[in-house]
Image (tube, rainbow, N blue to C red; front, side, top):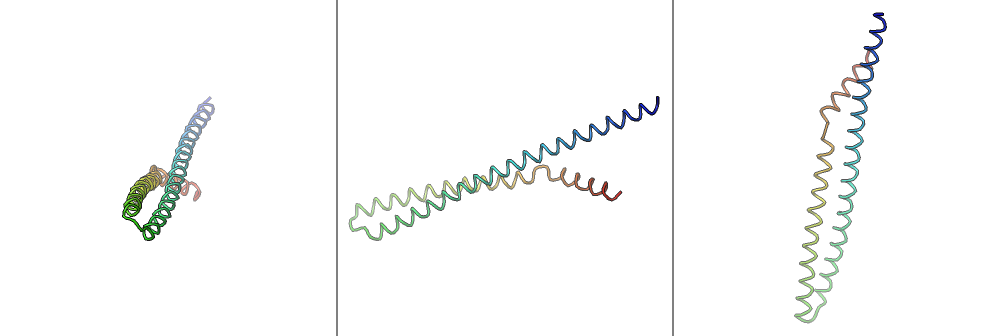
Length: 124
């Protein structure tokens, strides 16, 4: 009978270890998904920035070729609008880059402890 009690304890302890491992895996999966999503959004706004830079260069070329003050004002107005869009896209890209870095750091202490535990177990 005592053997059955010991076996039951082993099974219960092992199942709680599996639950902890599943929780760790779920957390890692969520963190990896968040990092991937934030990197994609950062890249998306990086492309927007490149497009706005090209528009701004085109506007500068048009401004250098304009002949009337009305055209000058219109080109300058377009340039300022493009610069505003550029700053907006840069701000969004920076926020997603910050969120990416923050997502990478979440749970790092527990991950480190888990890696140390695995290292100790492999040495045995």
